[in-house]
Amino acid sequence: MGAKRSANSQLVERCDSCAAMTPHEVTIKLITESEESQNAVYSHEPYRITECQSCAATSKQRMNDM
Image (tube, rainbow, N blue to C red; front, side, top):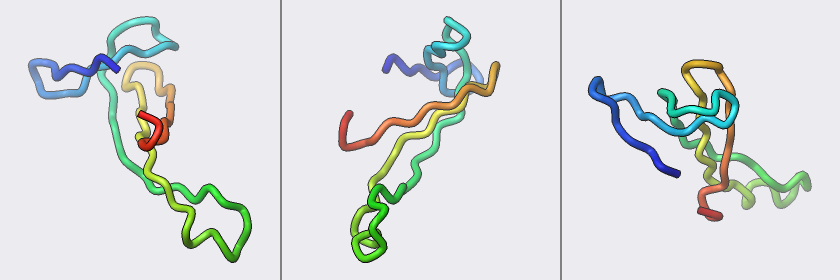
């Protein structure tokens, strides 16, 4: 992931939809992976969520897989 900060401190990353380097909003979210109710409390995993500020395309990547 070739992320950079632009002059106005926005995170700039490659957007596959735009096929260009564009500003992105990046957040971290805990997502429950298990559908079984008894194990759901133990199955939270951190994901990196990115949203392109040009085309609104979003992507998520499990942080443990980075």
